[in-house]
Image (cartoon, rainbow, N blue to C red; front, side):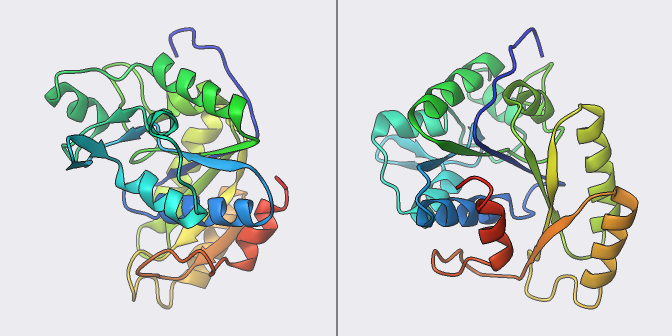
Length: 239
């Protein structure tokens, strides 16, 4: 980690077994539930690729979804802290940064988190891609997780491949000695995992020695008013 000092605070780090597994969906649900319960919680998406240019600015779509779900309208300065590394090219963070002529520095991401954590009671951090997605030539999302020291929520698919990807991800997180809260399974397609959900859940819990906290059904959009009871129960630990 290049000597980056570990920091801790209230909140979670939401990571996934892969890209597109539902990290943003879970982050939005957590933020909506936390705000509803009276917790001063904010999102952070340290690195976002595939940003959209609007009015000369790069807009981070994952961050915007979480903010909308939470009913938040931060100042431009605070929004920059919530997503300090933004890139237009939809690819691995290190490559996106290189194509933009820049470089992602771990200490900059940690510094932005520190400022948010000092201002708010709870920060829900969403990673980019999977656990070992590179952020520069030497460091990955795993290094950022270690630097922040937040409890980790792992998002996995419900269908084929879920068991292998989840168990491998759990092994990497445990090898890094990160505090694991549990797994949230999320259906990324309307028919994903039908007939496999119960079996996959039981196998992940048995072989992964971990609790599957919730199984989220497929949703086209994240709605603030539809918060699963399992997410509300998890949020109660931070309220």
